[in-house]
Length: 147
Image (tube, rainbow, N blue to C red; front, side, top):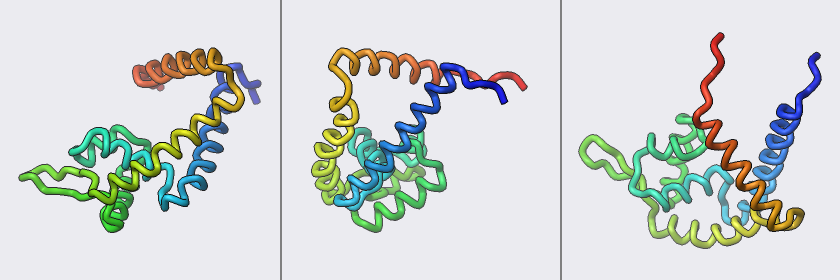
């Protein structure tokens, strides 16, 4: 087996951090009766509503099938509503959904920030943020290698 490169080791560390952060966030958000994915979906709806399911799917990391199931549950729980406007069905938060996300957001942002603020200096956080923005931009533009 080929030895790992610095790039592959960095990717592995990023994946481990993301997985651990998501697991802890899922536990943290339980007292709001939300998962990390649901929190992300509700934030996107709050920010961009009204929007369609396909517009929402472009903004989050949930599969189309997973998105359909999640939206059905959020609608059943009274957090979102879907309205048919001729051929287009749009999604928005209900008053209950708005209240839920407004209550959960400050706590979740503080919890997520603590991963960085507890161990990195402000300068390190600025550097990391700049590097992550560079990587994210590159990943959006990256093409698959020819087979």
